[in-house]
Image (cartoon, rainbow, N blue to C red):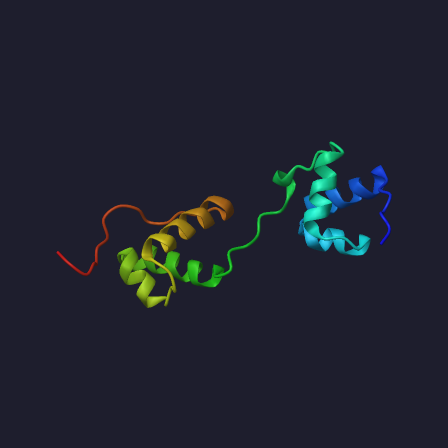
Length: 121
């Protein structure tokens, strides 16, 4: 097995690909190394890799989040009832956090405060 000689342009290209939205494994695949090796080499050679430039991924269940925001704003249901109606697979608190983050990123608002309709009281 032979050792590969790395050039700075190769490592800069990997770092820019990661900043552009690729994973480390995807960026390292053309060079025949693992993502861990590429990440280590980029760091060792002092090449800055600003992951803040990476585009924010869309929520995996954005359609459910949008339906939940619409229900919450129009009918004023609690997060637990809203989660059950949109068939949210996780906790109602996770739905609330996803809805607030979605509104912060894309604009709009979600109803806050006490719901008009809830399971108890």
